[in-house]
Image 1: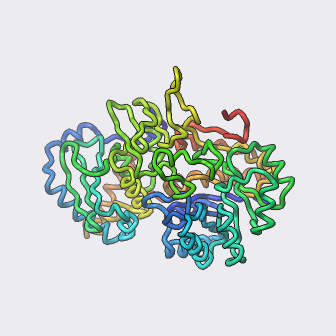
Image 2: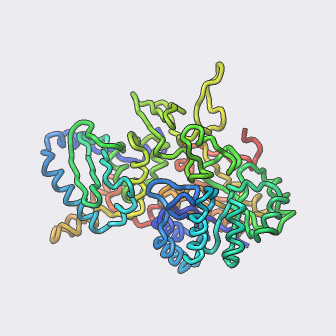
Image 3: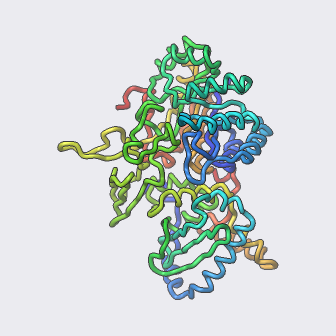
Length: 180
Length: 327
């Protein structure tokens, strides 16, 4: 086992089994709205995608029973959650915690590639552009959720903090001095 | 005199991370073919460069702009504009490789400090002194083919500052002279700024084994629990007669951290970290590590043990040519 594998938590299998019966259309709609909020707050992310800003991606959390199909659509993204392999020009696969950690800058993408925690298939140039664009955007997914949940933001923040402490999954953008 | 840590930044976020982590100097490039890391989603447009330099200067860090590919005949203007824009953005120096471009910069932007890129492969005092005399080059980045005694010999015969790589991807060839990537893809780091361009790379995972193809050629296959290397020909695994192996170079990263005291004695001014294609997480971790090492050296303390193996290609490290055990 690689050094990084040892530190990347896996989604609990019992919860993953429960997700098999979750209806996916509402999840797709929610993630589309969420990704459009992110796009509005971080237009530079889509500029940095350059020629790949209409390239369909498959994000494959290998410990979940579905994949996330992301169409950047020139800055008005569409997200579809599907069971099975999904279709896209580039596929990025890895444990959910690794994918979220990459977004938050907690992990280095090349290091995850060396350790085989992350696998890229299809259009490698597109995958690289997405990785670099996301890394530069300095996203905080928890902060983005808080900005659309109104009065629920504070209790949600506590839940996210608690979950992060208990699971070791990097659910927020870490303080740079602590993370590195 | 504290040795200068020269750190890579492929994006504005990485530049800020490097500054906050304690880099004395950051090197980066424009988002075009003028620099040797012309990868998708990477590098700086002119506005980002200007803002990045202002941020670095506000934290007393310097920024060097790499314009270190070789201008294409008939399109020299692209490279000339990059030099002019580097000066107007406030860069502390430009890193150049092509003698024609060095001449252009010296004649048209005489106050813009010039460093000689590793791409120029200047590996002895005579050629370094020539670049200093003709183009007023102030610093040379030495190619990764020299031993510590050879670096010491160079410094004894030149007033030009020397900068050496201490961490990151390791080219087996003398830089600026490698065309391996061109044979498989038609594109090279020297002319196009890309070694093994991502547009020509394909990975396939099959029952846990990972195949990497470059320009349609399978260049290595790793088993389920083996670390993956970069998809470069020089790190490829090939069969020749009855032998299968890494004929050019094993997939390892350079780490000369423990050689820093010797490099200082050899007269080296600056320590360079490779990896403009890496994330801000990598940048910050490596900078913190090396900053701690040079600070310890300055304080007369032993070199701290590093924690950088997991960031290394093949998850393995070498001291490269600095110690001639490197094959």
